[in-house]
Structure formats: C-alpha cells, structure tokens
Image 1 (cartoon, one colour):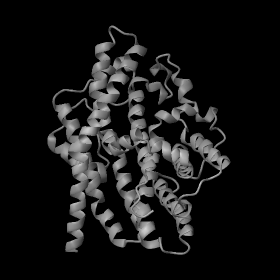
Image 2: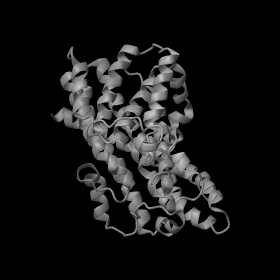
Image 3: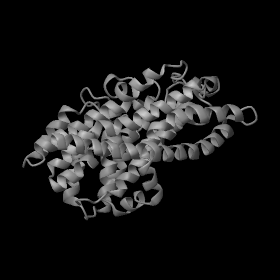
Image 4: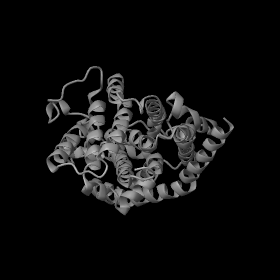
Length: 378
C-alpha cells in the first residue's frame, strides 16, 4: 500500500463536494427541503423528498461528514503503512498553510464579487422564499476579508464571506487529532482500545469522524486486496444510507424515528458520521464500488474537490441567482430553476478547475516547500 494512491477515495471526495454544491443550490431555490416551513415551499414535493432516504444526495451535512472521515483515512494510510515519522511531521507542518491559502483565495474571490455588486441572492429571495441569511447584503472592507480567510475561519469562527468555511476549524483541529493519535499510539499493541476511548471522548461531535477515519485506514492495511461477501456489503450500504440520510426535519415521524439519542450528541451529526463511516468502509471492501469511484469523472471531481467546495457558494449566489432572475419572468418556477441548474453546474465546475490550477495546486506546492524548510531548519 505504500505510495499507492487510493483513487476511489478521491472519487468519493469529489462526489461529496458536488453534493455540497447541489445542497446549497437546493437550499437557495427549494428551501423547504431544508426547513420545516411549508410557507417556503413551491409545491414541488419538497416535503416528501426531504423526509425520504433520497435526501442523501443533497444532504450537505452528511457530505461534510464524508469529508471528515476521508481526511482521517487519507492522512493516516501512508503513515500506518510505512511508519515514517518524518512524513507525519511534514503533514503536520504544512497542514494549516495547505488549508488556508485556498480558503483565503476563495474569500478574496467572494469579496471581489461583493465589491463589484455581483450578488443577486437578496433580489431573488422574495421569489425563492429562502430563509437563509443574505451574507452579501453589506460590503465589508478588504482587511476583513483577509482576516477571515487567513485567521477567522480557522480560529475565530468568522466566515461570512464564504459560509462553507465553517468546516475549516474542525478540519484543521481534526487533522491534528489524527496526527496525535498516529504519533502516540499507532505502534501500540492495544491501539484499538485507544481508538475506542477516543471515539467515546469525541462521540458528540464531528471529531468522531476523524477517529473513525483512522480506524478505516488501520483496517485498510488488514483488508487490502480482499473482497467482502455481498451480504456484508449490502448491509453496510443499507445502514450507511439509512444513517446518512437522517433528515434536517421530519425524523421523528419517518424511517428514523426508531434511532435512539446517543448521550449529548446531536442525532443528525452522530448518525451522519456513522453513515459516512459505513459507506466508505463498504466502498473499500467492494471492488465494483472502488472501480466506479475510480472512473475519470469522479477522479476529476476529486482533483478539484477542495476548490469546488470553496468557491461554489459565491458562484451560486451570483451567477445562479442572477440567471434565475433573468429567466423567471418568461418561464415558470420549475423550468427556471431546472435551466438555472443546468447552466450553473458547468460554470461552477469550470470555475473550480480554474481555481485548482491557479490557486489550489500552487498552494499545495508552496505548503510542501514550507514544510521542508521548517523541518530542515528544525
């Protein structure tokens, strides 16, 4: 496994990033899918969709849990295979810069659009009925944008210019939780007991996902090249979808009413994390799933996934809402949002590909050089 890139994990990450984009598109144009507010509905079966397992395809919180589990998995695999503490140090040394530079770039893109008056979310709101706050209603100074992208999103909970950055603090701290578990306990005979204790400590939040990602990476070293029996894979997928589709509202009267509360954990977070763990485990144990997510379209989405995640929200709130307002007078609501989605999707994907080329990949190289420099001087 050393040096081997797990392409299916890239594909899953790409699918998750695309799901977050679809989530926010639906949240803006079909808000009743996310809020138990019939007044925000458009008579397009939003309530039925929201309270069925199909909501998993637009369930942004579940997609974020996939990201977090994948982070724990990917950050752990090579170290568990090679035991190279120098590699782990390099990962730790570059992690903040690797996450921060693209996030800062995305915030600056969002700020430029705001300064140019490029957002139409507020103007579209009376028609979409979205209850989401208009984060672009007020122009903020450039220094505030710089602070948000470089510091605020990671340490202060400030992310108004690009709301998807709410995950950055969790991603950064979760990464160092992974590094700590690996450095301190990966060689311990009873490390599975350590994983269990860590899971109990962090069960009531998103950090559980990183612990379970380490578990998956450790399991990978034992199961690589093996195929799980179909009944096991089917069970993992079934329960993964069941937990992962835990809805934003309506769970108390739907398929999920039987799920118990787990201590102080939010049910929506706990079960989404558990669903993400089960589905990624199923994909890793089933060759057909690995082959599916290793196909070129998924690998492409995986390559641009961080950029797609970072910049889709400003694009949707500018390009998509602007197109929506342009089309709405001559088309019905359903046709308008359908055409808006068809046009916006390639725009978002192309923008993410360009951002990857111009910002994300250079940031990766720069963070690598920074880590080498710091460790050489240390």
